[in-house]
Image (cartoon, rainbow, N blue to C red; front, side, top):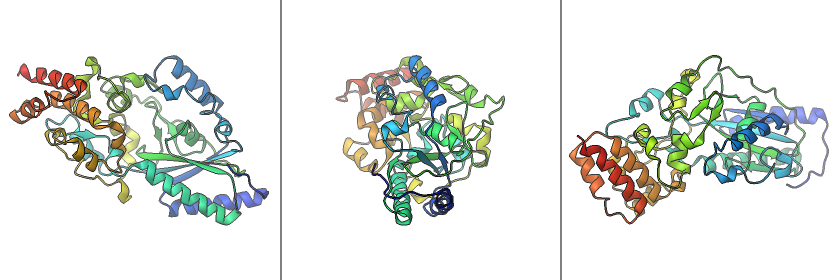
Amino acid sequence: MQQRALQYDDTDMHSLKRKLARWCDDLGFQQAGITDIDLGTAEARLASWLQAKFHGSMDYMERHGRKRSQPDELVPGTVRVISVRMNYLPESQEIAKRLLDHGSGAYISRYALGRDYHKVLKGRLRALARRIEKEVGAFGYRVFVDSAPVLEKALAEKAGIGWVGKHTNLIDRKTGSWFFLGELYTDLPLPVDAPEESHCGTCTACIEVCPTKAIVAPYSLDARRCISYLTIENKGAIPLEFRKAIGNRIYGCDDCQLFCPWNKFAKPTAEKDFAPRHGLDTAQLTDLFAWSKAMWLEKTEGSAIRRLGHERWLRNIAVALGNADTTPAVVAALKKRQQDKSAMVVEHVEWALAQHATH
């Protein structure tokens, strides 16, 4: 982070904050907030979560020491964090709900249907930084979008963007939880916003609806049981105990959001970058399973799905096909992959075929 050459008084910073709100709106962010860098409470929660081994194989959660909860250690000179959110729900929730556990269709987490959000938000945040620089001159900053040791939800909660719900996602009272987060670490001493308070009350809808019972207590998620972890972060075989519960979810899971009462206020986004690509919102499992690696690379270009890799893509679909309705097309699709060069894919294909052998 480069250091600012000039100093500003409180009047300057309040004026800049008002302009920031307008610029964020112009750039397509639905909300922005500012917080200091005191994350002591979040640091303690993270330590307990790690101690419980709820992070599974996500070893990166343990790296970097205190940099995750100490922004000024990650980026020296940081005194404030500008937190932003951008809505991404591409369609009505009712459409998405009808796809859950569909007999032949695939369910992909709604955030991954369009362009990779990392690229979209990073580009907008950099544009925001350029506007600030044009206004105040050179200043210190770094942009983050789910790509570094950053406690983005804790920062957003402190910045008034929303509160961390019992499912551990951030919720806004007016729009629900279907949004991405991004951060701009800065050395500008901007006025901070009031943190948001929890409004979950006695509701336990997310806990009750979770297919694999991954929300082991309010505000506590065991990632090792979470479908998003099992289908994306997990690099090995999917544990047998969770395969039936995964249903047709081949990339991530949205159940805790789809059934959260606060999302009755959610509306589809107008952001074209998040519109579904290649028919992934209505795709059939058998069609996706037939994609060669070359076709998969073509269809996932510029998508968050790309990080999965073709092998895990096939692994996930094999499980979903095992849970699909028994039809000649489903069985035939699975048999075509029985000789796949990946032992992991073959193992999941054999499991899936065994599910249909009883019908």
